[in-house]
Picture 1 (cartoon, rainbow, N blue to C red):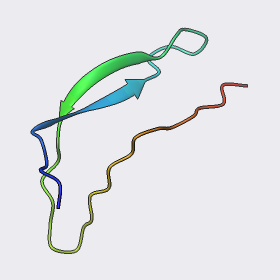
Picture 2 (spheres, rainbow, N blue to C red; picture 1 turned 180 degrees about the vertical axis):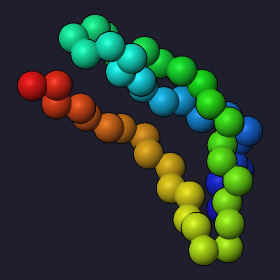
Picture 3 (cartoon, rainbow, N blue to C red; picture 1 turned 90 degrees about the vertical axis):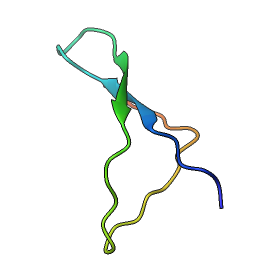
Picture 4 (tube, helix red, strand yellow; picture 1 turned 135 degrees about the horizontal axis):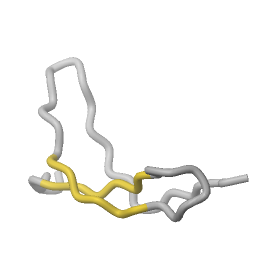
Length: 47
């Protein structure tokens, strides 16, 4: 199993029509009923 880091990246749309902003956030606490998946690639359609 891969090691889980303490931070992850997210892309945030703060204002419609503006570029997405990359931000770092802490990895959330995982409860027994949760799963955590690693996403390597994601595409966003902005139309």
